[in-house]
Structures are given as C-alpha cells and as structure tokens.
Image 1: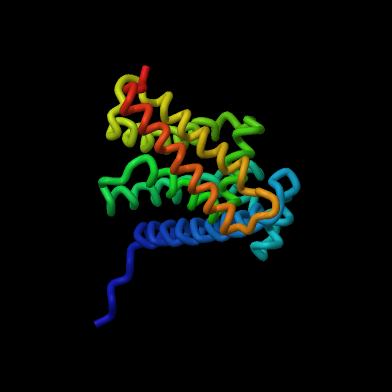
Image 2: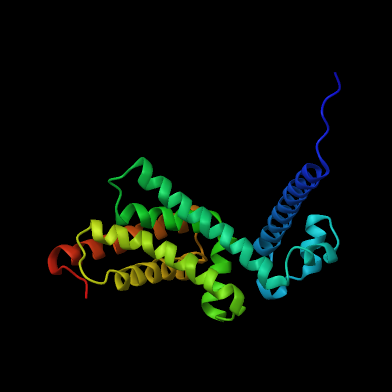
Length: 217
C-alpha cells in the first residue's frame, strides 16, 4: 500500500524546519571560522573577507546571517561566555563543596586555554562601544557570571550586597590574566601555574576577609 503523502501545509512546515537547521549549521560554521581568525589576529585588524576566506564562503553569505562584524564578534564571545559558565556549573554540580579557589581555578584555566575569548572580553572592557541592540545581551551575560560568584560569596558567609564582592573578584581575576598571561621569559606552563597561584592567593584573601570582618555592605 503506498505511503500517505504529507499535506502541502505539512511539507511547508517540514521545509521551514529543515531550512532553520541548515541556517543554524551555517551560522555555527561562520562563528567557528571567526573564532579561528580572532585567535590569530587582533579584532580591529580582522575583516569579513578574512572570516569568509577561513570559512570557505563569500563575504555576502556572512551578511545573510550577521548584520556586521560586531554582531558576529559578539556571537562568538557569547558562545565563549556560555562555555565558561558551563564549566563553572559543571564544577559545582560534580563537587558541590567547591568554593572561591575552585572558581578561580576554573576561570583562569578556561581563559588561558581559550585566549581568543579572553581577548574578546578585554576588547569590550577597554573599548566599551557596543551596538545598543546588543548591549543588554552583553550585560545579561556578565550578570550571569557575577550571579555565580554571588552564590559563592553567600556560601562563604558574606552578607548584604554581595555583588560588590563579585565585581571585585571578577575584576581581580581579569587583572591577573591581563598582567601575567604574556609574562616574558616564561613558558606557557610556567605562566599558567603562576596565574593559578595568584588566583588561589586572591581567593584566600577574600575568604580570610569574610571570616575576620564579615565583609559586605
């Protein structure tokens, strides 16, 4: 007996779903290519032609998925931020007892392993120019990272407005990476080891302050 054919409406629905899958796959391929280019060149020197060449497509095809270079740059950064948060979440899922030292280690390890994400983050910190339509999403990602630090500080005994502590912790971790990730005369392994020691020291200073003075506005 012949199989029943889908109705025209069902065919259109299936076609749209297939089209969305292809579009999503293409966007992911473009972001992958952009990340590889951003890892090798400073953002201001990267062109859409560089990314298109890396992806093996025409620049016009990129503009079908991304309005401009900053939209593409931010999509790549959002992916990195989500992966960073995923690593921190996985740490606390597997080891619920983890604290500030563990979060410091996860943060430094991820950004040392994925330096292009760190360069993206510092670009926005230093430049501070983002399309208005993207600004809220960028702020939302930052709040999500800080929310995880808030939870750690509350678990460590902080009271009051712990967000100021999370801001200090976040800024200090980034300061370690900015200051030492290119330390002259050291191997990458030595640099990463040193940054981890600094991260542990930083976490212990915060923990000590919480124990002795119950820091928190």
